[in-house]
Image 1 (tube, rainbow, N blue to C red):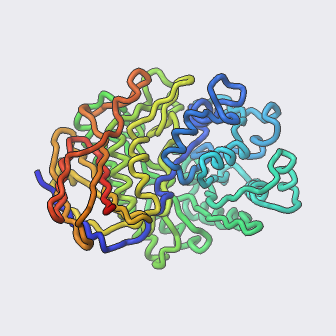
Image 2 (image 1 turned 60 degrees about the vertical axis):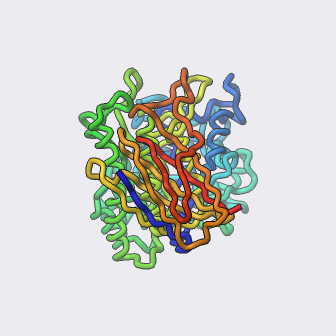
Length: 493
Ligand code: AHR
């Protein structure tokens, strides 16, 4: 089977916002507690309470933006419970996620500190479902007001003199569901009201994100855009890749049959249709593309690992997840004009995680490695790439994307979603001189559909140097093994 592509190295199509490679960490299961926060007194090595191994791993993939505290948790979260001396913080029940006690030890100061350590932008989601306008307004004042004010003074009493820089703020989460079961008309009005009091203090400019649609609810997008577009910078969208049915059996993360591999790929590719259709609705009200689509929850959602708390959403992560991630990134690149941020759910120990932990141990998942390999696309210029792919189970077998970074180096990412067959891709390099072109490659692939890393075998799936390519004049030939992801670097010096 052959696939061909023309890479127009001289046709630049705009910037791939690095925030497309964003993350999401909710107070859910073992994501925050155990996964990120262990506390200063923990025997697990930590920096001011944040576990060191996870911190270092996340630094390596250059997380650009981190969304917190939810998710469904956000519309139950009262930020004032999570500040001040930790021993005095109010304990609550996390009713959404497992009914466990939330001790509020990880609050605003700890989250902002984490973002500073990671050198990433914070993206905070405020509480519309069960919180007040005053509470949301005061949170923003607490975080960003510089001078003398009740909230800024309180922040100083709690040990933080300077305000934090906060750009991204979400006004509620899934307000059609766990965030209040609202109709779009009602939420739209509430959005207008709540966002009014999300103020820009002292030059801090908030980028306001309205709670968007669930999957293909185009009416939600229509109503929000019609009624509230002028009050927002971004509108969110949530879509999870679930091979089975949400309530009756999503499918297992490992040990799944072939048809679930195929179904997973189909469902992942569905993101393209969703973005196209939501964009069409948005275009009607915003032809100048001022309102971005923020896909602030996406990723695989399987049945939880047997024996684990069903409310903790803990699942293994295989080469199938890695392909789902690369398919998504290629789709997000295609929609780069409208899609300005996405946040995979979730960073550690929950859903399609980058990292899994068990006590003091940590492993990196195949998805982590995709984030690592694809970081070359962060803020790079998207190049025109015309792909002619053969079919596999009525889907394009190969997907690709290319970009040029500030140094002029070109990166092409490719993935072969066929679980059985290798394939050849011919890329015609046009538009620039190709003399003295050096090519280098990295590959992530596996022999089994559910190949994954375990605490016993933490490096079963990891990137390797890739050499199955050849360059003949302007023709670049790439041989892609089954179930593989390749990133090629092309440079002239
Ligand atoms: O990511 C898990 C949950 O999925 C989030 O809390 C919620 O927003 C979505 O339904």
